[in-house]
Image (cartoon, rainbow, N blue to C red):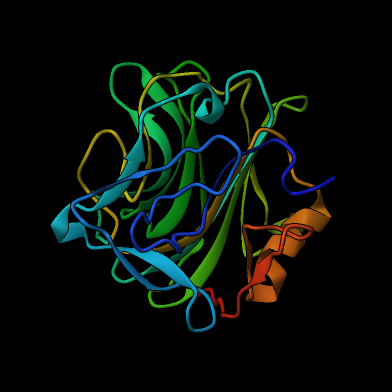
Length: 243
């Protein structure tokens, strides 16, 4: 199976004129709100990510559409993240997902300032939520985040840096709500607080990846982003540390 199979969006943040350009098949190009900037990604020179400055209210977004709505299917969301700073207790900036008001809770990776952890949320009905917390995360280093929903087994799973089975956090979830809130990187449809950090290599599939594919994307911390193998893939060099 190719990494292109059931790919809904692939954002590399390489196009300086259109940082939110989608290299996937559905053209889910993200609007750059308040001029988030292109910086070095988790990569060798010349390969970029997108930097968000919380004080400048920067985020990328696109209106909801069928390719970004995950109801009734298994799905997987991956991204690279490096914090420049982390907020304290009571602040919960969104990293990537579809999460907002008016019965609009769907799926989200975010930072839990109270627990000092990267966390995940999902909702079966747009109102009720299930949550997963992970290990404490350091600033200034890259992490590979992998959130996936297994519909047949009704499990939401989250892990960091291609952790082994013992490092996967899981919680029961019957399905993912199909809502109408925007898909956003660096924020949620609730608005503040905003992310203060760099994101690179974000991808969304309407299927579960295989263990081999997850390991390939992590690539021992070096990373792999679109275009994927067989289409002229670009490999990236970097490092990841949990602390």
